[in-house]
Length: 198
Figure 1 (cartoon, rainbow, N blue to C red):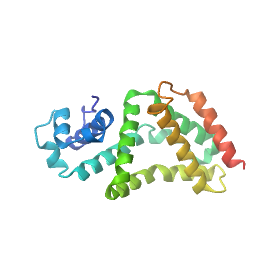
Figure 2 (figure 1 turned 60 degrees about the vertical axis):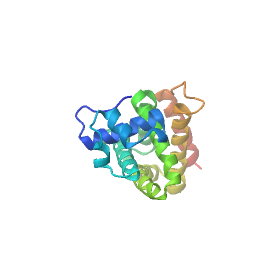
Figure 3 (figure 1 turned 30 degrees about the vertical axis):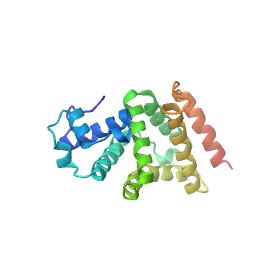
Figure 4 (figure 1 turned 180 degrees about the horizontal axis):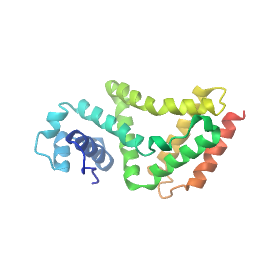
């Protein structure tokens, strides 16, 4: 199990371990005791930090968002003024990083586990959706700057395309193959031409 322990605070270590357990064992394998054992913490440490299962899941969702945001650093984000070309480049780079590293692929698996759990827990759904908005809102701005006549619909299409591609390449029938950056650029270019030149 890969847990990012070095230099982490205890809350980060707990949340990172929860994500690693979700990726490795699924939702049933995530318990307070399992986090303590996998993180090498004294018994009860996770319960002291997150008393309930919901609190532990919320900590995992929060850490998931932080870790995903770090895949593409702020200075690498495309400038909306760069239009379509900047959007294609930024999205291609981000998706390729997610798909080409074992740690990032595991992060996607933990995201899928949390998303499914959020469909069964309304209180987690609200929390999960709020963290997801931090990613959708900048994408909406990029799509609008690239000339979209219907940014809401086009952002949904773009997010769905990205999510579908990542799922297919990590957990679906294309899991043995990672698209190249060039292939991702071509795919994003085709998608955006279809949306923005309509």
